[in-house]
Image 1 (tube, each protein chain N blue to C red):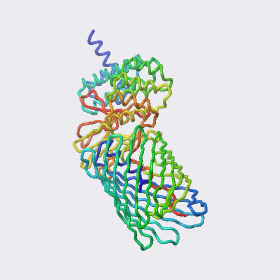
Image 2 (cartoon, helix red, strand yellow):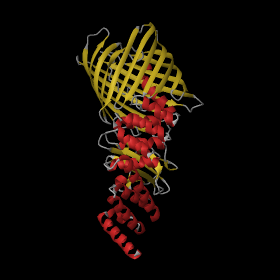
Image 3 (cartoon, rainbow over the protein chains, first blue to last red):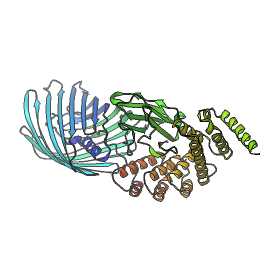
Length: 370
Length: 207
């Protein structure tokens, strides 16, 4: 539960920091990894894993499905799958509610499968750079056909500043007759193409779930907008809900992923091409000067862009799902000007570019391709 | 005499238009004056391409001919001011970025200081300077922040710096404070909060 901190903080931050749009996006990743693992009470083993993940989200709502196929040196196979949904309620001043639901199953060799179904309600107190929440969890976890009730309480806080996110939490959980308390702190930082994460925790007041300290770290280096190298390692505790036992590991993974439909740096100066169309420009960090243009215009029949890179001849965008129109154009290095129009309407400046007076009584978007 | 001058200008415009077929897209009333401005720019050593693009932009947007000519003339003036501040050897991309920075509100003195402070290409620092000023950062503060970074920062670092400033402004910081704060901090100041940190974890669960 607590180690989903980064995604949770990310979701909460996105609700506080950036303009909301009604856009939905789907992203997918596939991790291909080799690991050295040593579970408590077992000999060390090499392992190879495939871990796909698909995430659908729109502001305030997300649904994530992920799985892991893990094959050990012995030939034994571990399978794990998990689906999580999250919905935020409308904000009331600084308060906001969140409901999460998780269902998952895992199996290993000939042993009976673990299954769990968990619901969680959170109450967030949100600030611009920090926040906190309290939560209650109920559900059940089963090994084979034997269910056990799951309950829990948690309190957590987060802060972000200048590319660094901090997180701390205290959790008390009960799984059947097993009970434990976890104190955890985490940090996540990003510099250019490199993202670093680390967390440390201590399990205290445990009955049947072990005691001690643990921690993990990872470094993710983006090699392109579709490929990343992930190095990770550390020690993690027993998870009585999902049926995993404590151990330590070191892993090297290649992560393939779809580029996000949304810009990685959301537009700050929203620009409406028409009353119901939202356009932005994104310079993709591919090194080949590709620039993606995106316009959300569900009811439009024609979306065009023009700029100095087209000699100001309009080019038509292709319509995708959910009324999202896109085109990717390779543009030479330099300062460029761009305008967007929907259904032959007025030319406007897209967000994601600096807006400037165009000398013709309107606005133009200016962006740089380094 | 006036007739001779007019005929001469028309002949010149026709020749330039022949050299630059894209001008055929301009309204006939704008074609000759724009061609003359292009010729003047070439003679002064200024890049003609930004001027052509400005004229085409106006044509695509349906601007009246006199407005197209005025926009091209204004850009030619800005390019000239930029070259004056940045030096005769400035390349066309830098000139265009410099003109945009001047138009946004940066001072010629700031451009000259930037030229002295950075021995690498100036296009990105100038674009960042223009963006900061356009974002509401006072020109002096924007120039000071970019100058601090320009000596050693890579172009990518400067782009990240600009994003950090924009984000902090969006989060409620004053533009000047955002620029100062982001310059003081190390680069890599933007966090992609939409990305999940642990999707697809390959961590083994059991032996």
